[in-house]
Length: 211
Image (cartoon, rainbow, N blue to C red; front, side, top):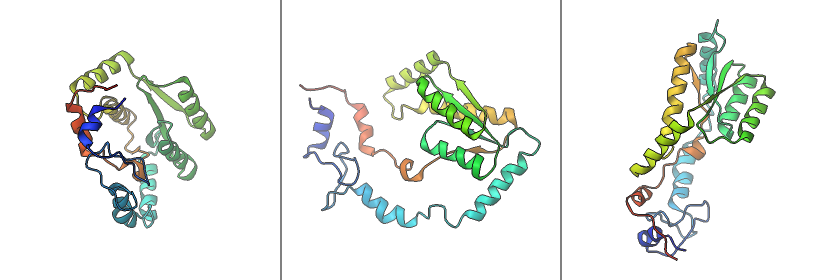
């Protein structure tokens, strides 16, 4: 079975990057003589040389942590940390508690997709670190209707409805707790990449299959 959108838009022999998983489903992709895509080459030539991996900002980080502790004096929590259970937020929680000695209000938001094992693993982590886990369960029927409505629009970024809900809840907690700082685990190496522009046009065409 061949997807006609990919077949008609690319009109080229299928090829996948020898360095990553990007392929000719992006009709604008280009490869060098070694089969490495333009995105990998951009990272190696432009981004990586300028990326200092946080080095040189130690004093700045120290001052920020001091301010978090200062603004949190007399309060039960000095910051809010959203814990998804993924690598980035889990590492952030470890650093906040063990390295920086902060007192985060740890919140996990279930938008309806959680499996029991997900919450079990997150609870194991917070128990080991000695912090209380707060789990917020969103209204599944409401969340489902929002995502179905977004699906029907044909717009990109299908996670947008739940992402907006996450941010709204975190902001609400910040006001309620009187906490100024919100810690966000983010990996510039894996998350600072935008989807190819050519993929956006695929939403305008009917999805069919040939046998």
